[in-house]
Image (cartoon, rainbow, N blue to C red; front, side, top):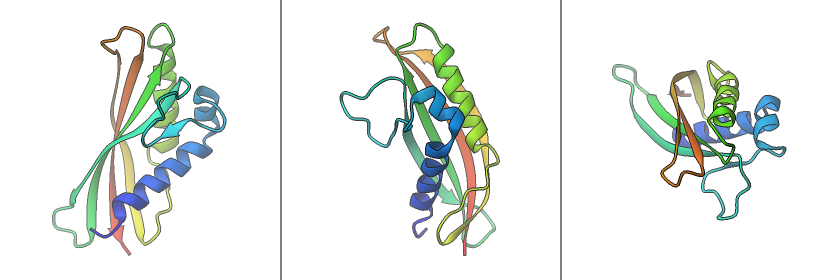
Length: 135
């Protein structure tokens, strides 16, 4: 599997950090975390779970399942949904560059927005599917 997962995460992170629409939603520089600090300013985005599996029938290909989470203290789902839209625009069918691998595609799968149990924070999740090939 080499390092395709890490290379994909780096490319996703770089694309999101550079996206002007996303920065207008979560700050500039964009507040995107792998593990958010305890006192992170809202709103922000986190890189969530990532899974990779062999792409059946194609040697050197991996299928990736990526989740990104948006967090907001805005009263209602509006801010979270705006963040998720910016993430969609930045990543769906994007041409990302990975070191040592080719990105065949990255596509949006679903998004959801909900109020967390604490009643103060809204959370959104966006899931993407990507396919990579070893060079």
